[in-house]
Length: 394
Ligand code: 7TS
Image (cartoon, rainbow, N blue to C red):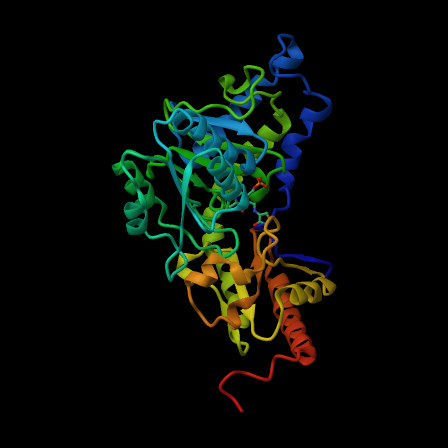
């Protein structure tokens, strides 16, 4: 076996069908869509098809907007800074609620607007590792809260938040609701018509599309100050020449991802559970979060006596790619708010590794990973001075 990729929450392989669909837009249909000549106008039907696929993928209404941008980091920055400029700077409202478990692009955007004068609450998660609607309800200040921003699924644990209830809680109080759905699209159904979110961000490279392409869904009629000023692209909501190739690729990737949801729920879940059962069957290992509360592809596991980083390096030597959590967060899992909140065995939950599968992961790869994982843990425990055998045994 050559190499095995189990870091799909960081990024994914571009589906060959997506790559093929993008190909003509580099050297043949490369016109600027805003140009009036044929090179420009011939791109328009392809852009419409792409946007239709994105609308269908999240079940958006035609009155809603989807702004094509460069990544989820851009979408999340746009919402938080846009709301700051629209509602907070003018002194109408001043409060934003987010959580302690958001991706750094949400967390740091909130820290940024906090420095400019916004008041930000970072909600903790409960013992299941999720944000409880009751906690959100309590944190909302009806006359002051401008925005709630809560991720749909966490990138490190795979834990899914009760987004519908959270969005309903915010809407009942008349507060705007944003969700970072990067780790939900292609893993679980995402339907904006069934869930009253105002803003939703996604990123193509997390569902087998190209890196550098993302989308920001905005519910009907909502105005938001743009992050990028310039040309009139995206109806004046996001300036910059449209990357037609990536937009087309993202559209196809969305369609394939949504068509693959049943496979994800059945087959990817079966392979994930097989790997997880084998890991949990080893002594002194802990998987974070109840299975039924997690996306079907993710495992965050902690192994007593073994540093996460050491395990990653050892697996890497065996050709297996895993991660210590988010590639964007350098802090150790010791300070991961989910671990802290779940108040589990602190020594065991001290450090961990994330294994994330995709629809391209095969059974043979999982079987190989199970053997390699056991080998790595035995080797590393053999050289660890802190591990002295399973707890509870002499
Ligand atoms: N939001 C979430 C929930 C993410 O998981 C990521 C990337 C982003 C936003 C940023 O997306 P981008 O489109 O700007 O790249 N998360 C990770 C990760 O877990 N490991 O590496 C990147």
